[in-house]
Image (cartoon, rainbow, N blue to C red; front, side, top):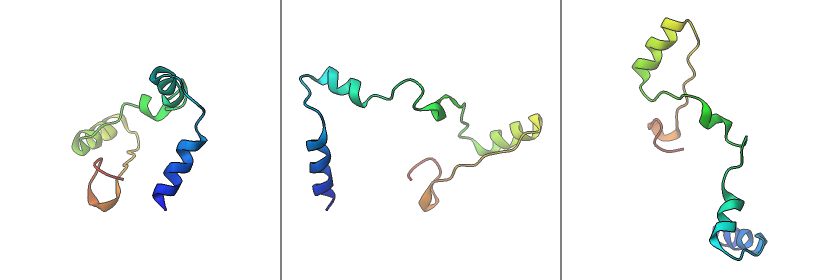
Length: 72
């Protein structure tokens, strides 16, 4: 089933003459990935200390399976 969806997705793409044009099509456009502009911290201890020091809440993003920042 996954192969069928992948094939349909490829067929739905517009014809591309070169790889540069394809890269332009799939590259994130300005304003699309605003989450990437956030200065994320990967050390929980440092994040907790900074949160307490600045009196700001802490947002914890945890991936499934028990691994943090490893898989989703």
